[in-house]
Length: 265
Image (tube, rainbow, N blue to C red):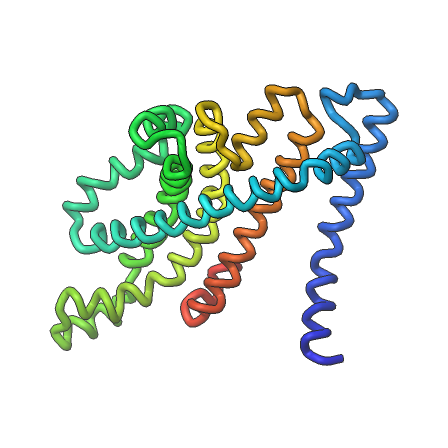
């Protein structure tokens, strides 16, 4: 068996338990809805959900694209801002002590409390959705990269001091390479949060405009009582989160493979 065929066989073997669980859940769902005669407005059958998803496929596919675009931009913005702030924090304990509580504030305050303010300041549009996504995704990246920049091997640090390396050479040649694995870990955590943030932002933005994202579409279908289409949208949002995670894993493994060994264990 060739190496690609062996890899595919290994992936299939690893995916088999998850597929079996999914099949079991769908079978129990179908049986439960039929056996207990659950009203369709409470829980439609898997067949009804699949039918609604197919009928609304154009709307759903466009909504997935809009939400994915906002989540990717939000995650990218969070990665850039989080890395720059982490570099700043790593250079001074005073700066870290002074600013870190305010970053923590964004993590502890519920996003539903500040989303209306963001709409007031930024409007009913994709920019607000990206802001919400970036805010939710920021903290894991900032926290992990800061930890990586500060987690220096004492021997390496003493070697740089011995050669009288300045602040910038130490940052570029020691701190940043050390933090790359932590950045990859932060991105893996934040990619799902970026999707959640985009959908939450779309819930609020969609109430004041005809926004086509997944969150706005789900909010409208909820108001219309279209439970089958709503569940189809929820399932698609979950698949989008999984796709984002797989994409981030692929990118980090390819671009940062020298640094991320062991971070996914």
